[in-house]
Amino acid sequence: MMFWKRFYGVLTARNLEFWRDKEALSWNLIFPLVLVVAFAFLFDSDDRTLLRVGVVGAEQVEELQTLGYVNQIPYDDLSHAKRRLEQHQLDLVVSPMQGAYWYNAQSSGSALAAELFLARTVDYQAEQVEGQALRYVDWVLPGILAMNMMFSCLYGVGYVIVRYRKNSVLKRMQATPLSAFEFLLAQVVSRIWLVMATLVVVYLICHAIFNFVMEGSYWLLLLLGLIGSVCIAALGLMVASRTRSEELSRGLLDFISWPMLLLSGVWFSLDGSPIWVQQLAQIFPLTHLIDAARAVMFDGAGLAAVLPEIGILLLMTLVFLGVGAYLFRWTGDGR
Image (cartoon, rainbow, N blue to C red; front, side, top):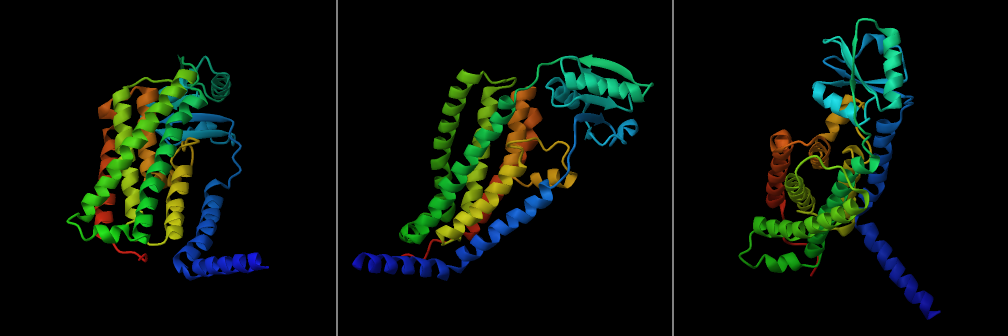
């Protein structure tokens, strides 16, 4: 009898504590609703695509517009489109301005697309490329490593700050000469070396097993990982800069991480998706990190080629740290 009485007392106290935390209660209700509605609009489609055709210098090839199972993807750069064709990520590349199309002789899908295109056109010159298919495990590796980095930096930094605030650890630090920016920067750096060491170990073990494709520089890839991890950790700090509830902070971090996970190209390419989805993905640091890493690994891109992505990540880092330092509060609800 006494067991149930004590159990009921603790249960009631915990329920009342959660109910009085209006911020956490609101996020537990709003977050799943927002995700369901958002992704219902993003991914609810009757896609019957069988062939993917890259179109260079135009939006569409008129001869293929009536074929509902052909997805035409516009490209500005012919070399980029041909590289995708060599890796079997496209079945055909067409340049209406040059009156030419390219197919991959080592791809059955590309041969089918070339036959289909040839049957509908007469004024295009055929050119052949060769290249082995890029394995999905190769393609998805940068996304998986970036995903691990994202969760480690967001929750390993942001969630810890909220716990410090709730337990009044920050309140005691406020009595020291330590500034908010110095404290936040130290939190970022303390997490970065652990994240980078973990990523290197995971990559080396997986590379020994699967022999991943690597066309570019390992040092450049390491630099991208370092910049990306700092940027995402700074984002976690910004989220935790004023939050006092652990439940609310977890809800906010989930609200940021899951859309970023699904829209940054971790598991699948956004090529061929609606333009507005691709534009929306550009607001996430994970998108720029993964795009740059894949360019280095699969296309052999150098520093100059990924410099725009690095610039965006650095700018985001400064914004996140600046806003986080401005909004940061030391005091919490703990005693």
